[in-house]
Image (cartoon, rainbow, N blue to C red; front, side, top):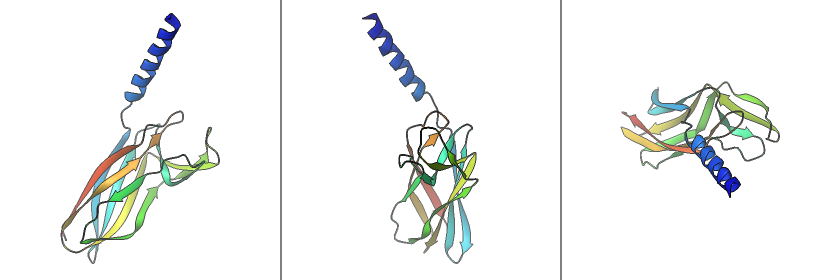
Length: 150
């Protein structure tokens, strides 16, 4: 009985410990005019050490969760291409994962070019997961909003 109680208490402590980890990311959103009614939506991400975020093409065994971006439909907004990632991408092997994996640490930017007809607000969500050498936090979903005055 005492042994069962100790295991239950240890499990409870571990679950509280994993809930106590704050999100080590800071996101900022910026709109840059490219002229001719085209704009670049920039997602600036800063990640606290020792955490990293997977690349949009992370490699590995298929179980890594790459960042993804979903834009709400807007009649006067046309997406030009797809979201691209920019930063110091690292590619290596990691214990517990098959094959090479790609990720970013420190800072990374994600960019989406849009063409708009008139002033508008572009909204949506992005999902991501951050990991360190020993653990990954559960995936997070955040809302974003870009105000364009065209």
